[in-house]
Image: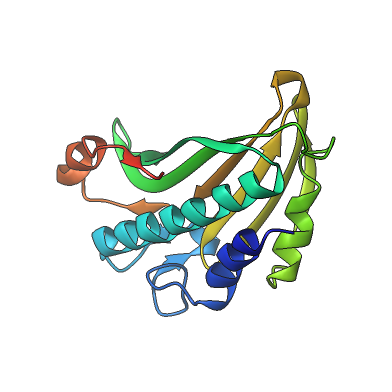
Length: 185
């Protein structure tokens, strides 16, 4: 088990990330995580920071566990709910990384993931089959974290961290769409 991976999850689970799901009118899981307070920019930026920090720590930790290297670590905003009759009503931040496995990696590339996440205090892990592989996923402090392996596609895992889905005013839609992709290396 990698110390870096355990540390990343410990920060996420125990650190009490701000700007994510809360009981004081933040995101509401009963409505798909939409923002009820109007403080969408602060919440989206907090998700951007939190998700980016998790990928920046989690991906190198997995690379160490898999005797491999991190590739294509990036993050960006994307639409998560449509506006009627057209447009995007809400945005979320998505941070991703590909971790290539080295020659000394275990056969099952997901082997180190559950142990590391559970050691850091995350108990609600879900392992599921996905087309061509398997995924380990969890949610913590308003972020959805998943690590996916698809052996037929190659010896690598995909790390994905997604923030909450926050409504934005219609006149700000283009500004959120035009934001640059973040390099998370």
